[in-house]
Image (cartoon, rainbow, N blue to C red):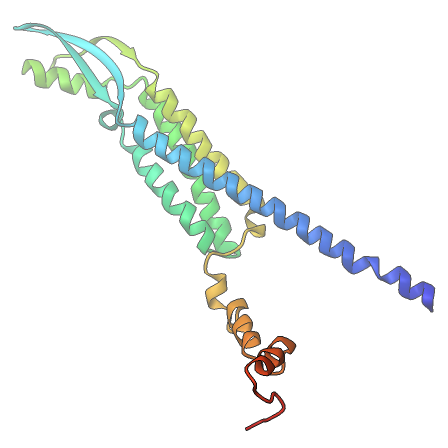
Length: 219
């Protein structure tokens, strides 16, 4: 009997260690996802406001240099970055299948922003529109097009958002829910408060004696 009892003791301990490892892994993956997602979205928003393409057009007044920012070329990366930021918050508030749906949305936002940035890097429509506006000739086209590094910076930052979404899909089930502590009736704080005012607790008895009160007096 003693041997059976001793052999059964390590089992709860092993289970507790496994849960602790899972919790630590969940916290690390959550921190990584939040960092990657927030950083990626911030860089996408910044890079979309920079010059993506440059060119020139020749009109009556001579040759004019043209520039087009990322937002002029395509608004998709900016819009998807905003969606990604909202998804980062929502993935903490959601639970179960809902969290997986939001995580998938986060990943798709990153993939979509990266694709849009790479496609927009070689899009001349924005410069052609500026050429027509500058010369007053609707048939005017920009020439000598060059691309800056900003579209590729945008695409790389969008891949960080994609990575955050993949982390959420893989480890999201181990992450805590942001609203969980407020939805449980009698949560940790409430239980702590009740314990703190329990007159039968030893420390409360000693405090009563220090105040000159009789802790056995129920009146």
